[in-house]
Length: 258
Image (cartoon, helix red, strand yellow):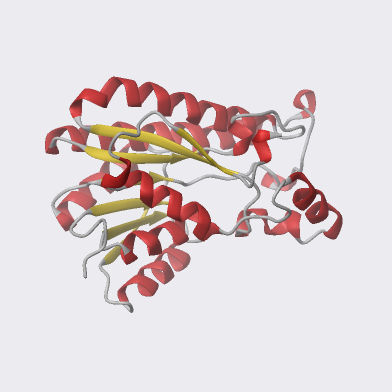
């Protein structure tokens, strides 16, 4: 029995692990054909294998989302492979901690290199993906896009100025694009996860004290799972959400409601 996305083609950036992998698997469960994009080939190919061994269709493309030519080639390959692009989850991102030996820092102490890297991947990368996805979707007469922002895109978070700025930017990009293309059949939404158990958060969660603080900040009393975020992404891409655009969906255990 075909799922709610049967016959659709979906792209997931950052699909080698975490929320991206969970979303790709959920897209596949619902019948979509997948393009998995990531810098990390081993993880990306593993995601592809997890889909194909269940009878799904998926292919991996290695891409640096900060490079316009690479993103343009990614969208071109998706269309060459499957003929169209119906859904896109722009999920590639980094936390900004641990880059070049740097760790959490106050705004005035934040390293220039780390700032530029976080903004390039988390914000410029999302914009570039949207730029070429939207161009393709306009040719087709429509499509759906979901960007990964963060609960930190809605509130402040000390010691993470670049991450917070980038995720606030993703929220703004999402709303703007949603308004620009609403009449052309393209819906654009974003998700704002709270603390989710992924490789990106693994370092912080390995510290018992920090993990306890994360859990204490979540009204539901636990951190989230990637699959819980994936279900929201796939719903936003489905026809069940046909009247939803420009929406910022929190999947955060109540974090920003406090």
